[in-house]
Image (cartoon, rainbow, N blue to C red):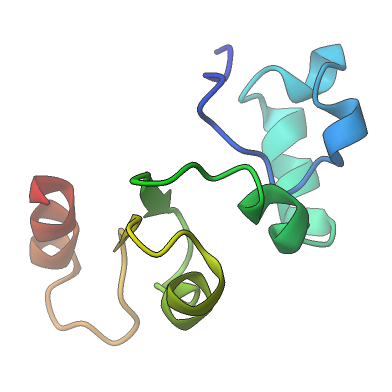
Length: 97
């Protein structure tokens, strides 16, 4: 599946965003994402004002960083929360935002 231009990659250096393997949400892309350093600062500079940022991670660990470093009027939505008794309800509430 081809990734949207709104999908800011934090696992591929910006100079490689136009490479064929970086354009698709493929097993190779996801494996790269899991095995390599997160380029969070590089990606964060591309987040526009009033953005909705969806965090796909084991838990919403980026909330404090995004509030401090991200656009001030952006909305951050983590899809999971560590130790939440009802992960499905948390996920559905997050999606409802």
